Length: 358
Ligand code: AHG
Ligand code: MN
Ligand code: MN
Image (cartoon, rainbow, N blue to C red):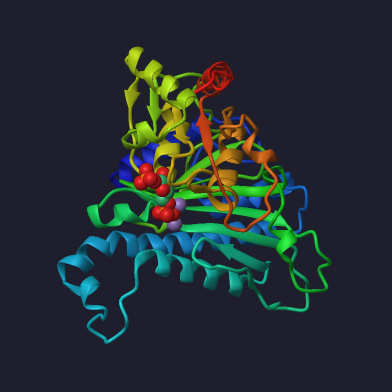
């Protein structure tokens, strides 16, 4: 979006807001919004504020590299394994992982990190004598197979307050908390424009990166998901591998002439659904009997966001995603997430057909 158009959009959206704490007559940057919202946090220590800002910084750095990805391929650097300076050329998801870890390690507000790209938790040594109370989990690059074809990808993050004693090292139990315990969650979408969307449990707000000033600007205030829609999102190539109830639901979508949209990057699909409504499904398949997507850094943060926007998220056992008990850092789960009426409709199909003998 051209800068002028972006600013106009930002101003138009902001002019509709009523919060006394957020100016409604000018552009509000992410940093200003976070600072002004600090009083809303349950723990107004400034630590969470700092963490969100650090993630915003990492997002800008990752965005710069994502935007260059096509160019790097044209120059033949991605395949060579080395760039012209002799540095090893890294896959973008590894790059994104490293930048996020760096930004969080230097911030002093996070005591440990978990990532899709790391088997185990990463302890963060304290930067000052002040103990840090938060752990952060993320999927550094979601939908990374889309990079090669210039399609949207994203970063997903979840922030929890640690349970363990702040004077000692963080433990795995600080990460194995149910999604209801998230204190903040969000995503960055590197799309036609780059957006950061997050929640601290008091609604969902979206910020669009204005590349000319290098700032995320408030563009989508208090986002609400449409109650219902006629669009569904699932990898229908796996149709024959789905359970009966899921096949019946998909048949019904088709019978009703619902539209099918599937990007193959959960962030992108969920972002579209947040704005336009719909349902995103990743049920069990023969290859992934427990579902493919990861509970802690894919499903939980997006479930918190969607619920905060008025939507619903459950697994195919009809359990609310945010209440699923985690027992493993990289645990997978099935998911149905989106407009509340559509999730309820799917629930009715599952209740009806899963009772039938195969
Ligand atoms: P990631 O790139 O982090 O591994 O995640 C890919 C995920 C998710 O973003 C997407 O919705 C899903 O995998 C696509 O899977 P299929 O190709 O099996 O449809
Ligand atoms: Mn992912
Ligand atoms: Mn990933």
